[in-house]
Length: 220
Image (tube, rainbow, N blue to C red; front, side):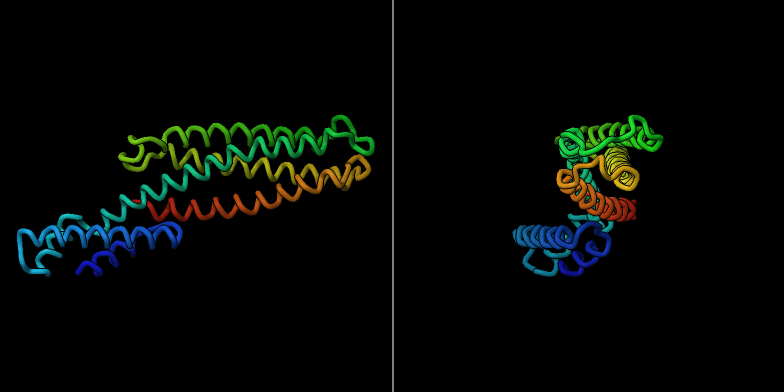
């Protein structure tokens, strides 16, 4: 009976396989402890297990509580990563592009202004969303409360904003490299360009996975 209950809970769980497996193990361990405690009031193992299952409640409700926790943990991690990535990108690109270009570069090329506007918008969106999500997603009150929409919305804003920044930086680099390759010190640009592409792949995948957790965490 205990294994059947955990199997039903597992059907509703979302998140990485490692976390789902850890949750199932935690539930099974808790049920076994509850069943052993019930043996003090009844001698039948089956009845003790049945009481333990009733104490835990419906599998869908148990899964919903764990899914809310999974969403909050994932949101906090991704928001923090997005907020921390912005200053790292600024330092990497600033040192590469401001450290003495090898050739002339037009002062105000049209695409540069558009790109900088997108970068600025993405930075504001990412920082505002990430910080609001982190603020609402940490602490004892956040852990005890049901899923807060601000946490999910803030994390989505942080990821989308960061992806806008990464896309704009990539576009600006390609445009400058094609139009005025002599204006770039390529050895200095290789590191931030590689970091940008890797970050775009990582956070793009993270956004996709977070959306799947978000959809799966809807009431069942």
